[in-house]
Image (cartoon, rainbow, N blue to C red):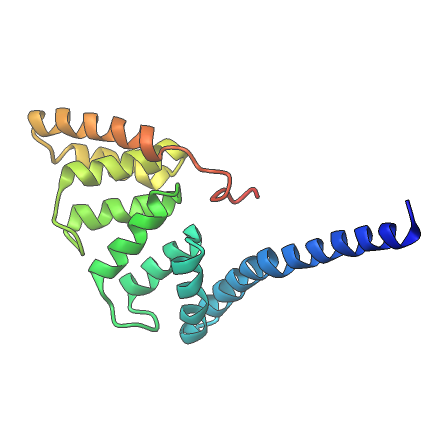
Length: 175
């Protein structure tokens, strides 16, 4: 093989590595910048960071933090409906605190219709993944259900656990 072909192959590999770095590393770095901005009270920067990640990259934790921002009115006008929508997107991707918070939205009727069966279901999914607060909330929600509602809630919870009860690798904090 000629030295020109070898050089060309190395340049091509280097170019591909550079493209991957430019495409994938900034999303992770941007997300961390958004979390830092939120932690330091720079809500505008956090919002500007999370929105594109949540909308175009379907980034589960950006969606979760947007849910928190809308639930708490941080940098945006508090909007329980928008908060619940972002929590749902993150919850369906296995973010256990989003699942827990969505359960709370259903329990209180914030941004979604009040529905103790769905509250129980989302708490169950979060508890299944390991959230101890969700296990406690699940038991409290169960105590508010009639026998027929309990049966229905248990069936719903089992279905939801099958569907959302694992943490996909791309959502895992152990990436």
